[in-house]
Image (cartoon, rainbow, N blue to C red; front, side):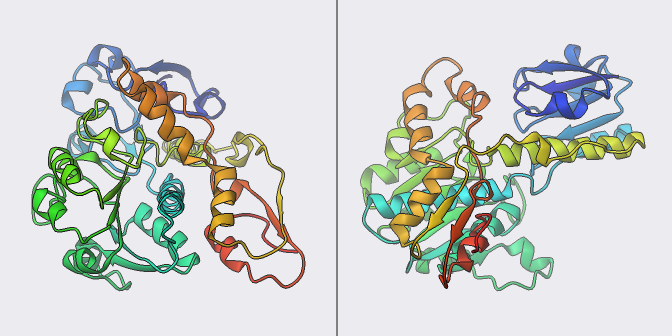
Length: 376
């Protein structure tokens, strides 16, 4: 069995090596000729899986995408061809939620403006938006959720309008899929008009899709409003962000908010499980066995961490400043954006760091944040 796989997908060999011949490919430049004799195709969001890509293949048994979203996959075409498909919903939700939370802590420290006490509006309450809300609520921050689709589905959580978030939120974090048409279109959801109407000193984070913000309009508005603070992990025109926009962001990264080792492993592992089910064979591999040991055995708490100490703990796990610095120095290089994504192998989640304490410290909120081993 020939398994064609995006070269940037981790843990493929230990999971799929026993199932067939693994052929790594560049997912962004993948051609129909390369796919012609593949039995299994494993992709990420940079690959458009459609009739054009699969036109010469008559033997494909399975398509998997190690992503939450499916906007890069022509699901109707796969159904028509009776090609089984699976993705990995929620695989990197924790990573994205922690990335957004850490970015907010970094902004709070940089501008001496504590996160605790602010109101955060989350636009899009699916997997990643919910994970962001989980971190914030564990820390005691007030969260406003906006998601008209979840409302229509009968989600029992409390939701507000986008106008309410615009009026009340000190921080807005975007977590919607890209939808280009229809009632709930998210393409340029934040256009020039909406960007201009952001309340003073708003922090705006985008960890979903670059096209959700009109990047050209964002440049124009930001140049006129230094009070707005930006955290941008996604960009219009990826892998070629507008060079004028990058310097205007407080933190800038190349679409890696979900790139924790745990999230990557989880995404690939979910596809392994789905393929095993499709082939009707037992899934014998173990997710936790894939992950390397964390470089810090544990941290003992003497007192309840304040916000500065919490940021220090977060930086043990992931220092956003490092990726921001590398990105600014490399994004204009040839393939700089994709090279950084490909080589991104150091990010961990809060669960990698074990915390310990003695006595009666009230630190359950650290466990709720995701840190492991919280206790005596």
